[in-house]
Structure formats: structure tokens, C-alpha cells
Image (tube, rainbow, N blue to C red):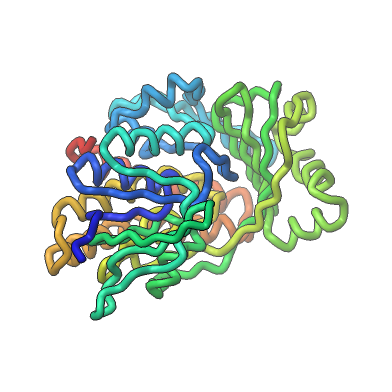
Length: 385
């Protein structure tokens, strides 16, 4: 049977919706499915780095992020123990400020843009398996809707954008090319009445924290530690006691104490980083499905936006299955890996919590260098949408 779709994208959050948007804008028949409901929230640091803001601007979507009330971030403050080092975000490449939209804002905006570009987006649709040709090539997906209705969708390419526990990656046996060992555990929450000075990052031996201004006048706060440290604190007195133990010595602890927490305090158990091979016969991976790193990097959303365009450009350069597409997807992986591996190495050290304040400064300078390389590549791409 002839495929109904050129591409099926599994996952309609940042990586998946962005990929669907760009492919549909390029004229392909695109179906994007997600098991969640529209506008479902998810745990996130929200922070976009310059590369992420640049992508939204290049795609014509930054104005909508601003219109949603996402505050401008023009300053980053690094707290090293008791010392604070402010850094001004200087305008460059048309980006005059950073932004940190709530995922309910950003994910919805991208999914709606994908629909306007011509993609079909279906929520409440779970992928239960893959279709394969007689030669083993992936040729589509099996689905189940919330009402129990089963179906199949045939496609020339299936893209897994379904997160670090990707069903697509598992089903195709995507090889892991890099596996980290270190990981952080985090507490996440939102505070009202706790203003911050742009992005604020805090580092002290054995603990990290971040405060990020987001929509609705709220500040997203995360507190991180090694998993055994966090588990010990939570087991001893619950997430509230762990919060007090970790935030007390932080530079913005007094501001949080004066503010009001809004909603639940979430405990996120970290996992080590991984980098998977991101393409094979009839399949490709994007976002966390192919490249997961510790959230301490606060760079996951930015990299998802980056890789969505790298993948979409590869597919549009070779829209039909065959050797040309395989070569284009291999090029996508080469660029992704070249940009990602240096950052993975730095974040692996950060997530180990085996550093002192002098070393953490050096690591953060190295992290900034990897971001610069990424921004320069993205700024040099022709406008895609």
C-alpha cells in the first residue's frame, strides 16, 4: 500500500511539534501524534538560551511567546557560594533578551503553528507498535485512541520525538553511542511574589539551584543535588524538609521564604545522559529521544529546537526513502553529535557534584563556549519557516 503520510512524528511537544512544523512548511504530508492531552503541562526548567530564542525568532514565533506574557531576561546572575557575578545579556543576532515560557505556552504555540503549516496533529493517540516492510524497514505506526479505537498509519519515515524513554528508540533498537554515569535529582516548584534578577544560578559544594522568571508572574525554582543526597533528604522529612535544607543557604532563599509557593513541589529523579544513534531504515530520532542530558544544563529545550531544524532540513533535502535520504540523515547525526558531545562532557562533570567553586566556574565557561558554537551554526542557516 502507498503510504498516506510522508512523515509520522511521534510526540507533539517541543521537538516533535517543531519538526512537524518545519516538514509541513516544506510541503510534506505530516502526521504528528501524542498520547497526552493538548496543552498538558510537564516538569521543565523553561529556560531558553540564545539559540532557542533565535530559532523561535527565525520561525516567526517569538512575537507570540512575547504576547503570551513571557518576561524578557536581560541578565544572568551566577552565585558561587556567597559571591555573586552578574552578566548582562547583550543583544546579538537579533536576540535582545532570553525568554522562559511555560510549557503550556510553548508546546501549544508550536503545535498550533504546525497545524497552520499543514500538519495533522492528533492528541490522545498512543503508539502501540511499528509497521515494517518485509525487509524490516519501518513503514508506519500502530495506534490506539482514548476511546480504544485501534488504527495504523503508514509513512515513508517515522520520527521518534517521544522523550528519553522513547518507544520508537526501543522498538528499533537504536544503539547508544554515549552513556553517562552522573545525574542530578531535583525539586521543582513555582513561586509568586519572589522576583529574581533575570536567570539566577547558584552553585555550592554538593548543591545547585536555579530561579527562572516565567509566565503569570511566577518564578520557576529548581534545587538539585546528587541522587543519594536528595533521596536522603526526602526520606528524612519529605520534599518540604528537603526544600528547606537545600534552599536555606542559597542566595535567593530569603526571597522564596517571603513569596508563596503555587502548586505542588515536584521531585524529579535524574538519569544519566545518553546519546543514541538517531536514524536508520525508515526511522529517525529527535529531541530527548535521541539526546538526553542532565537538566542541570538548562539547555534541553534549546537543543530540541536546534535538532528539529537539523532533522527537517535533512529530510527535505531527500524527501524520498533511499540512499540519498540515508546520506542526509547521516549528515544530521554528524552535526548533532559535533555540537552535542562537548556539552555532554561538561554537563557530565557538573552533574557529578564532584567539583569545587573554582572548577565549576571553569566548567560553566566551557559550557558557554559550546553554546556559542551552536548559535553561530543556527544563525548561518537560511530561514526555514
